[in-house]
Length: 297
Image (cartoon, rainbow, N blue to C red; front, side, top):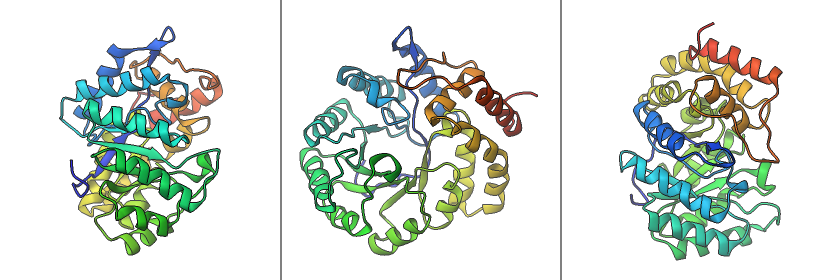
């Protein structure tokens, strides 16, 4: 995959299934197959939704390797490689490249609040250390820093910076980024509820939490949007809106794991400090899944 290769459609931010406190490899492999068969166009393991903060470095690498092995080149794998420690981010990115990932997703450094120049130097260091495309993950609600359009433009001049996963929840950004960086800069929504509007403004796809539970609906919505069939996309959006709300009533990965449990696909096991959703939230998720046509009433 080159920097300017097309990267479009619905891409689940994969959950990491656990069983008895360990990575459930059999279930993870089954999820990979189900996602690809349902129309997902890329897979994004070991991000926030994959509980990367509670994975050891060894586990982080192992999940990436499992997903790559099971995908077998059928779709690109964009491996999470984010850290607020630049040396650690480089190490994760190098491992992903060596394992065969087609690209890496690198979050803006969180907690230590770098300046725009600090963010530039962080991403430049990762860029200089590897030879595969890098997707910037800009998520101010979690990282407390917001990479400016101008900083992205500087980074886009580097050999491997290919695009952004935009979780700013600011729909103006897709237009501003398109204006400054051009139409080939890959723009992926990181917000399920606003992904359709993001696409209408020039987005290329969505890295989705809800696609863990509703992969075909999310893939079909993205296909409609990419074809310019917004009437068709809206019909799918109407089915998904309650699920978008329900999944995020508590941390989204907990909602996604609950939905997958309802479908009989995983154990509802998380690592502390995250917890399974409450029974009340579980009931809301179930109702939303019925509305979407994923479960019978």
